[in-house]
Length: 109
Length: 116
Image (cartoon, rainbow over all chains, first blue to last red; front, side, top):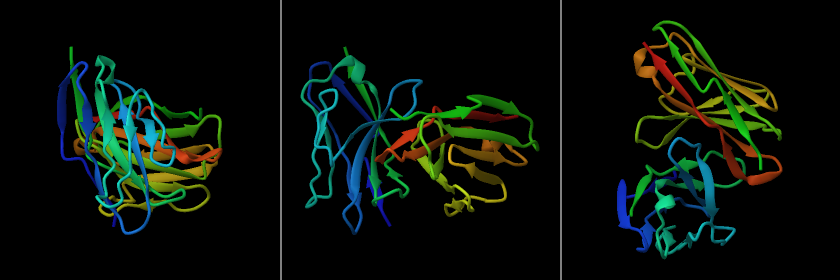
């Protein structure tokens, strides 16, 4: 069975400071990893996925298969980054996605 | 991008009544939709996978007779909470894989259910 672990419930950083949201997963195959973001009073939306290897809103995430991690990083936090962030795993195809418990990022002005 | 809508956005009902929540894919067809439940300040818990034209697949611990799912068309799935109780109060969210962009799930805005 797959599992996604986000060890931090809350992460508070000052504006301009680096951000790293941790995500570890367990799955026997080669999954797809995602980061979703939920801003206050808005729906869940895709932030980025590992296969794209892209940077969205300054965020990046690298899949480390050796450490089974997919940490989300941003060099300089902005106030508008404050939101709930969920790491998610898809075994492949149209299958169900497993979500982590989420980390609330709070950027202090 | 693809859009998933839900109706209603919130509903309040009395204990013992049934409530139907609709999930629609507005500009794409979805053979598979997912229903999640989200408690305050907690993550999404998958309840069931809704398959167009066939029975839904429920996660362990989810009562299929209580949470009826119907996926009658490629753009509509419904979740009916039968004989609702206060403990069913929650935020229900649906999602769908876009057939035009297979590796992305699109989420509905959610439905807040409050059972009195």
